[in-house]
Amino acid sequence: MALSFQDIHEDVDRILFTEEDLHNRICEMGRQITADHEGESLLVISVLRGAAIFMADLVREIELPLEMDYMAISSYGNGVKSSGIVRILKDLTSSVEGRHVLIAEDILDSGLTLSYLIRNLQARNPASIEVATLLRKKTLQQAKIDCRYVGFECPDEFIVGYGLDYAERYRNLPYIGVLKKSVYEK
Ligand code: XMP
Ligand code: MG
Image 1 (cartoon, protein in one colour):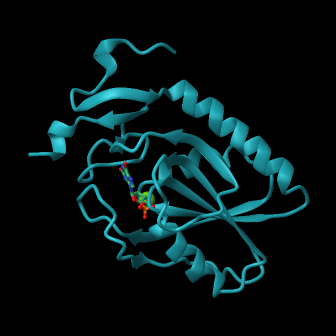
Image 2 (image 1 turned 180 degrees about the vertical axis):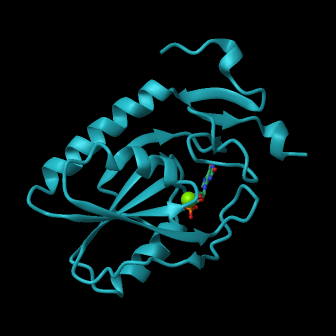
Image 3 (image 1 turned 135 degrees about the vertical axis):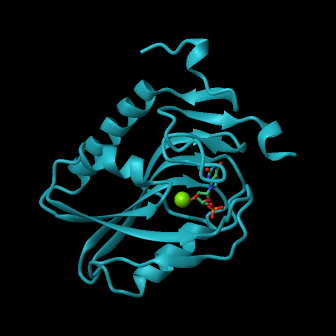
């Protein structure tokens, strides 16, 4: 579906991935995950709040028995740069022990958030842990993360839409775009 100029939010500089791009790529990721995990069941964990929309779409493309659970962690506050300080705001309900865990993440930037999360979950003795991230920023990652499934590479700018926010706004945009610098450089 083509987007007209009017469909672009006034705070968004440009669209990186349309609804159609997202749908097509997430279908491919789901098919890949299904093929790689034949005969297994998964515990899919979403990192709230940014990854909730991605996870909702991804699980519907995975043809395997699976459970969903949620964790909320924060390394950002309302700013645009990772603080490196990770706090658990909400822990999982399920036990991870002996499970094949798939972490659904919205965006991998410095890697600090995921590296903390992986270490934390590893200590709970899962059978395996893998990461599916919708976006990976082209930055020098401070923490090297082994990400088995990556949706798209994206530029090192501030990204919003499809779950991603700036100060809790823009999560409901159906596409992914670059936020205008004028919005946060005031
Ligand atoms: P790190 O640097 O720890 O960051 O890999 C990962 C988390 O930071 C958030 N993040 C963003 N959120 N637009 C956003 O809306 C961005 O451009 C962006 N970059 C990082 C995000 O929550 C991610 O989980
Ligand atoms: Mg996040």
